[in-house]
Image 1 (cartoon, one colour):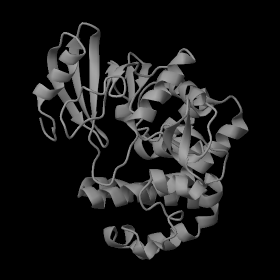
Image 2 (cartoon, one colour):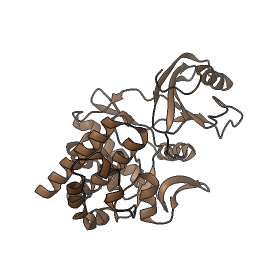
Image 3 (cartoon, rainbow, N blue to C red):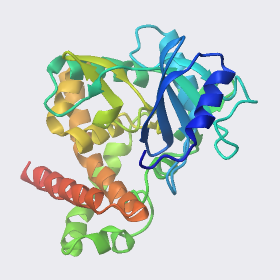
Image 4 (cartoon, rainbow, N blue to C red):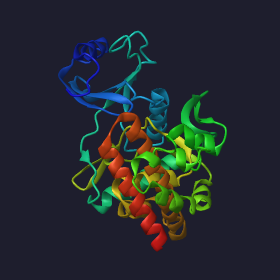
Length: 320
């Protein structure tokens, strides 16, 4: 029960209030934005997500639900189907200090790893193409806008700042003041290498914005028997250039995952190559974000991973 913040009795009362006939309630994880539980119910297995963001983390659970409903309405989308949420039943809550919640049909499967089969990546690419094709306005994290969705910021740089922490060069602050300066023995050399790429990084972010998933780590990409089961956790969905999704995928699962996902995303080879190149550059910004989050959350292993991604990313770009 490590990192659990809600009394299981509160989760039970929430499910009982929906007449779901709860059985076998299990605490699953404390993610960056939500606490996640699994329960067997009369409606089948469900995921109960209670909004409980980490320090400095903002999220919009209502936009997450609305986005998945929009994808499902379009047909053939491998995402978790919402069953109920706090806006439908405002009188129900797991705890007074945790009023926002959503209950989804459970997505089976295991986390995807770098060595997962091609079919998983191709299906992920097709799903991302559907997500990126949804019309949207604005920049940054999603919000509900009338009957639709929009980014809550007015320009590209503000949108990037809305999703990422200390995302040089879009933060307006020099690298000398970034957590990188305290994290790496050779921070000055790394900063010089990054600064030489500043114009290329800015150009990579300057594309027509789309709705990106915003957190393509292996735990959110569920697979079984060599196929994609579903894409979960849209809490970080934002309006950004499409290459940001591939930059995040690269950070978590490597460049080969990006190439195989792009094979399902588009048949236009030139477009795929552009997105892969932009993702290579933007992945450096993702690594800087994770350095900042590692300091905020006190996670030295996360810092070490982010530094490794910076070094290998810079080496690859300079070698090319």
